[in-house]
Amino acid sequence: MGVQSPNLVRIKKTCRALGVPTIDLSMDRNLVSQQIIKACEEYGCFRLTNHGVSNAIISKIEEESFDFFAKPAVEKHQAGPPNPFGYGCKTIGFHGDRGELEYILLEANPSSVSQRSIVFSDDPAKFSCVVNDYVQAVRGLTCDILDLVAEGLSLGDKSVLSRLIKDVESDAIFRVNHYPPFDQTPKVYNPAHKFQLHDDKMANNGDPSRVGFGEHSDPQILTILRSNDVGGLQICSRDGLWIPIPPNPTEFCVLVGDTFQALTNDRFKSVRHRVMANSSNKPRLSMMFFGAPSLNARICPLPEMVSSHNPTLYKPFTWCEFKKAAYSQRLAGRRLDLFTYNHNKNSD
Image (tube, rainbow, N blue to C red; front, side):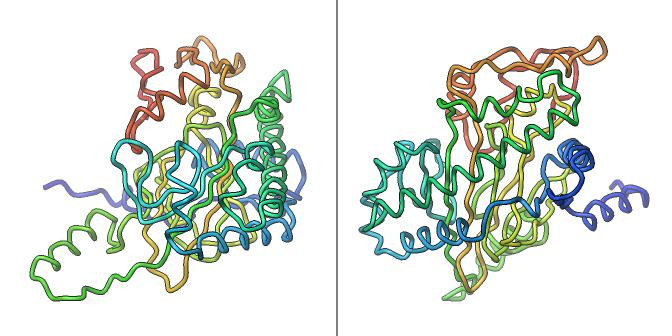
C-alpha cells in the first residue's frame, strides 16, 4: 500500500484551509481584475462582496421563491414538468439524474418570464417584475466581471466577452433551487442501514449526508450564484478535494463555465461542483444566473489565448451545438472533450 508523502499531505491541508478567495468589487479596479484572473486560474470560482446588487432586489426574489415552494405539491406541479423550462422536482435533466431538490427554471429574458409567471404566482405581474429586476441586476454584474477579465487578460477588445451576454438574443437562464431538509434518522432499525451510511460516508469525503445535486460543471460562460444562510455547496479543487463554500447571503459565488474554459484556451478551467442534501432544520434556497451567448454565437479560443507554445485546444463550435452536446449527456459528463483537438495535452 502506498503512503502519501508529508509534502503532499501538507499541500492538501493548505488547500482545504485556504478555501475559495473572496474578492471585494469596491477595491481598486486593477487589483480586482488581477484577483479575478488568479481566482479563475486557480479555482475556477470566487466569492464576491460589495457586488452592487441591492438587498431589496435580493429579498424580493427570495420571498417570491419561498412563496412558490410553500404551495401544495399539486399546485406546483401545474407549473411543470420542465421542458426544459418550468417546475421540476427530483429529476435533473433527461438522462436519469436525480437530486434532493425542487426547482424553477426560466429563460432569462423579460418576455418569457412574463409569459410563464401565471403558473408560478397568484400575482403574475409582481412575480414577473421581481424576477426581471433580479435578472437585469445580475446580468449587469456578469458583464462587469467579464470586462474586468478582459482588462486583466489584456485583450484588444475589452468588451469582447461582455457582448456575448449583452446580446438581446443571449441564451441566459435563471434557476432557483429549493432543498427541503431531509431526515437522516433511520425510522426502523435495519442491519443493512449501517452499511449504507458507511458507504455514503466514504463516497462523500467523510460526510454522511446524501448528495442533493450531483457533481457537474456548468456549460455556460459564467454562473452567478446566491444562496441563503444554509450551506451545502462544494467545489472540487484542482487536486480533487471537495471544498465547502460557507453560506453568506450578502455574497455571490461566481463559477467559471465550460464555454469560458474554451474561450480562454484552458487558462481558466470550469469548476466542478455539487450540493450536499440539506440536513439543516431549514430549507436551502439558491439562485443561479447562467450567462450564455446567443445560440448562433461562434465559440473558439480568443486570439490572445493562443500561441506557438499554447496551440488552439478546441474546435470552433456554436453555443447551440455545445448546448445540444451538454443536454445529450449525464449531469457529470465532460462535454468539452467532444470538441477538443488532440495535442497530447491533458484537458482535465
